[in-house]
Amino acid sequence: MKYIKHKVECPICEGKAFLKFEQKSVPFRKENFQIYSHFYKCEKCNEEFTTTEIDNLNITQVYNQYRERHNIPTSEQIKLIRKRYNISAVKMSLILGIGQNQYGLYESGEIPNESNSQLISLITNPKVFKEHLLKRKSILQPKEFEKILHKIELAISDYDESSYSLTNRYFDPFISPSEFTGFKFASFKKFANMILFFLNDAFLVTRLNKYLFYADFLNYKSTGYSISGYNYAAIPLGPVPQDYKTIYNIVEENNFITTETYDYGIDFTEKFTLLKNFDSSIFTENELNTLQKVKVKFANLKTKEIIEMSHKEIGWKENVESKNLISYQKYAFRLKGF
Image 1 (tube, one colour):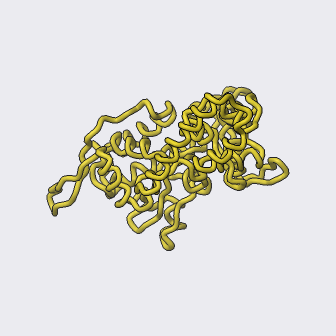
Image 2 (cartoon, helix red, strand yellow):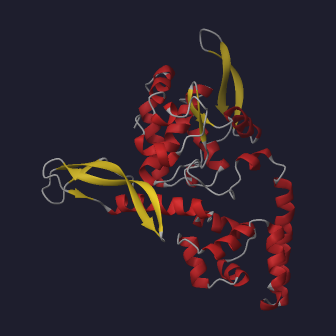
Image 3 (tube, rainbow, N blue to C red):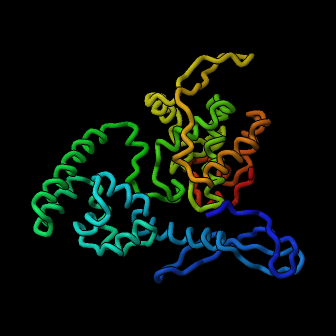
């Protein structure tokens, strides 16, 4: 999906058409979902129209909410589950008893039915997958069975170790995405690299928190997905990554950044410095464009100005008193800073 433009040429009269949205109830699989339906409206002839990108954004909102409501894994998670066991898509479809073509469609984005979805979600746990494999042993050649069983045993060992990892507790890619994660699974690598991208301009915590918030919510505004898959809370100083102090400690423990004492003229505080280079390969073109937009806009703004900007956000205003998490679906499309 390309980055959505706020202004395009009207295909009817060639006038200027501006991006608009309105709340709308959309039916899908005999259920209704509330979305922010986007469209362009020409200021010259008043005609309304959409583009392929706009249609994708609208339907993505429906699919995301349907997946959340029925606890259905995303196509990215389905691929990740398979890669956990280092098994081909053909073998995975055979073991699960799902047709090869159908399983391929799931990995490409088609929403599984509830029974297949439940099965795929259950085998996230390698111990459960092992039990399922043992039941399907007869459909595999003995050498093939032993090879796959060995891979699952290795996954079980890794699974038991990762359950004690603080990183995995906060960035578990197999937890169901929701409106509070921007319908993406939490990616530690993306979150850490977002920090690296912004660090030269935002090496103090308060400023960095705002860069991260705006990057994730701006990307959702244009694509229907966050970048990092992480959630944000409203606190008095503005929107911040939930448990941000712990999160930054995790990033530091994984040797992405280090903390140093910084004299900013009035007092001493802590600042972050990077230990690794930014890895652009893990981001999509849209995500990189979003990161750059935030970086450019905030480059010449003082931290106080960015805080004041964040305090105008509806998502912050409506949640700060209770310090609730901020819903991407409810607030990203009403973002005021961008």
